[in-house]
Image (cartoon, rainbow over all chains, first blue to last red; front, side, top):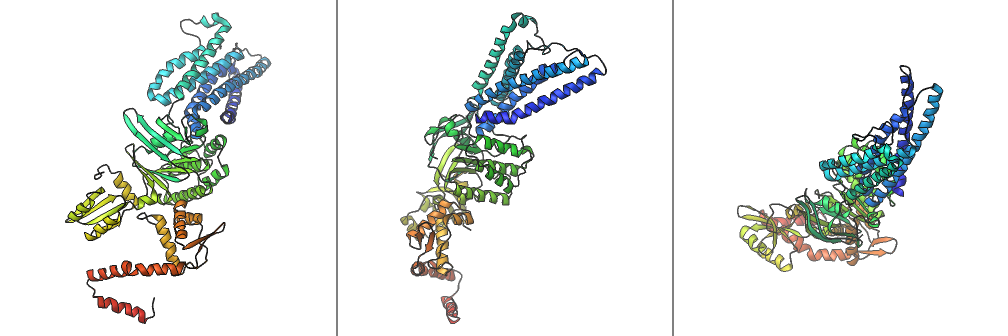
Length: 218
Length: 291
Length: 122
């Protein structure tokens, strides 16, 4: 619980600030763009579908690459840290999706006021799942590179597949190659697949991390 | 804290850093882990701290340490460039981790030490000098108040006044809060008087484990006529020899008994003490004499 | 300070004995505590404790529970008696050997010693 609490207070505040800054930036940018052309897409959805997942991917990397060694150095086991970090990634994804939803509401108000057009965006659940998977994939890739050095690149294709599974129900997050309509055809059941991707990414992370040595910092 | 190491090996690919090592430490002392660069000090301490999975057994108070939450709580290892400090973090942030995650952490003491070593709390770890970064490691190690605290080459890059401040802080905190402290170093002269017991390793193997004060009486330099010196040292452990003309000086290891002292006097040999540092150099000398 | 060429506890004990002999430490005077001593000379407290324990065993010091250690009343006389036993073997004989080695006649050495006596010296 101590690990989770410190992660939440140290990283949580930072993430909330980043989200607030991103929202303010998106609004300002929309107003600037509106001076030159008609607004037709949701600027906030660009943040939510493109920027946010990379931010959470980075959080995943940071957790394993930077914070895990500190936890072990302060007498915490890998297992304790892994459980806390997993719980933290769930909480973070939920909060990020909630902030995103609030952002859509606020943006909707501004767009209605200004009579702008917004494109569609995904359901809160779709965002939660995407954030979860991307955080876990960040943890997985960081664990692989930390433990196996350059051989860690083999984690990248695996991580890539897991990551794009979770982006299919997010408009503006990119479409699938070859079979672009498959996910939509499957429908909401696809969410189960995203959940599975999250579990797989976490499981792979644990397999790598459970016996990983703490390297000497250079 | 009782430490038991049994058949411990640490390998990196083809390189064997620790080779089937076994020893026990009774604890509640200041130990010196002495060895040349690359002798396996850091690997050994990493295994003791649960930083890496041991092949063989490492037990603290009878319980294996690796991934054992109860045992891990009792340990703090700071390797030379401060393990619990991320380069991108500010010093204050680094100390917050200790306060948050260590039950035994004394934050007032941590701040006091940071001030003593003149480490700015707002400075980023990456911007600290090597000596300051070592000092930050000492802050983390001492403020953790861990029943087993290990400092690996903690003096690296420190200037002389800082080193003495470190020795004083260490000694006073140890007396106020007795615990097991292991200091690793290859610079013995300054640190030796702080140590109660010494563990010397070389090439991944245990060379000896002895009370520091006993070790100080163990080495003798025998000087005299070459033939007499050879006769006298024939049955002794000779660490090194050097000759000048007909005179020869031999460093022997081991306590001399009364018969030997009498014999030395009869042969007109001069017996002199050997400093701990010299003894260490010769015990771990790659081209050393007969072992 | 102490050197690394002989056991530090013995060096500490010798130093305290020397202080008792010279009168720098008087009978029933309190000596530094083990921790003060360790901290002052930057040495391991267990090493200092061993030295003090040896001095207690040799009855140079005595303990007052909860207060500290003190110089015994008979310490100085005892150390002087011990010193007299070893004085000729450890001080005079090597001096004579040294004088011979560098060619100073013993008569000259004796004359020098007598000068000290005449001056009422030490």
